[in-house]
Image (cartoon, rainbow, N blue to C red; front, top):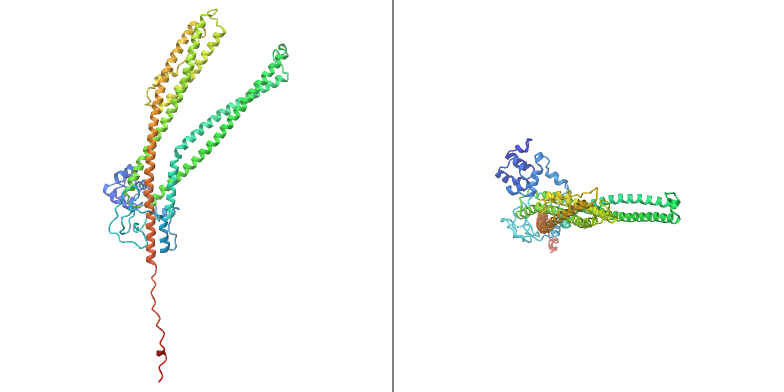
Length: 555
């Protein structure tokens, strides 16, 4: 192979590359389509399958060794080094016909034709097709095979690799493991479990900070209580009297005890969270191990199939199933991504609705307090002198407005993030959200009737804005919920269809491998029977001479 770049290869150099990577069966197709080096670079594996008519495994091998022109491909070394491919050991004795005959029933093959192998000419009776598939035509002109071997198994002249019962059993176990782990959706559950662990660890960090703060408060309160009990001086100690001093000491002790109770409660919460963290870590480790097991099983499957079917012409039924599986896989991944996006947007919208509802209640309460504050302005003793009740009402009104402002800001932030994830979310306009996000309430220095009426009017306007935004968010939440239900239904249907088709593909490949193993055993049996020496029948010894011949008669 020339050392020039792949893009500059001619058609003949492409055919030479196919020969180098043991894909001579594809030479006629590539020669017919006049495939050049630039075509190999530009075409994807899926396009090769669709346009040229080769299998996915063949396309994968073509793309794999392009970087060095196939120099790194060594079929014999690859097969010898593979621990899962059974090869006769050097100097190993040939199995006897009896041993081979005993090994064939152990495969438990239910029948079925096998058209992937270039078999030696042998006629067979039409075999039973795998369940759910139409019967396959058997090539004519095949002579009968050795006695004692099922006639439905064609014997390959030179199989690419040795597929024995151990390989078939390992393939069966691997496929069963893949189906089990994919059925558990371990690859989907692992990211969610890691996210839950991260949230739990972030909360643990916050609770640890609170615990440290509570410990400091407890230590400070306890020191103050101990100092008062020991008679430490404080302003007014000797003027308040003994009873007042005792009451002050009791109050300090009560504060210290309350701080201690808060520390105990915080410690109990931390202990609970640490237990949850340990359980979540165990769940993540369990899922990680299962995902690693799944990936290892898939790697083994991807490694064994090219070795088993190396250089073999594609099977129409297998190719059809493989194309269907390959077509469903990206759809499944896309729908799963939709589910993640819609779920995240739905949770953000739900959180925004709850925060807006909280802000709505606070603003309505503040609006009522503002009306009460205006009414009290008529009974003030002086224009700028407020009563004690008026001061308390005004303080509650301002506190509710401040809390409502914080909730509105948080809700607006959540709905903006949801809108960024799903831009088509209806009724929610970012300009309205940003306008509401900057809502604020004036804090008048001079508290009088005019300022109270202006504050009440502004609170009333804010209530209307929050009501409108809450209605939009509620509509968007229902819209997202409907789409999420549809996506989940589509996902369930695709997962079921993918699992069914993948099981059919794996079952069909399993049938092919069983037939390959049985055919190879049949070939070995035929060779062993042919090499058994035929015993030459020895001539019978001559009969003993008769007495008459031994002793002549006497006269």
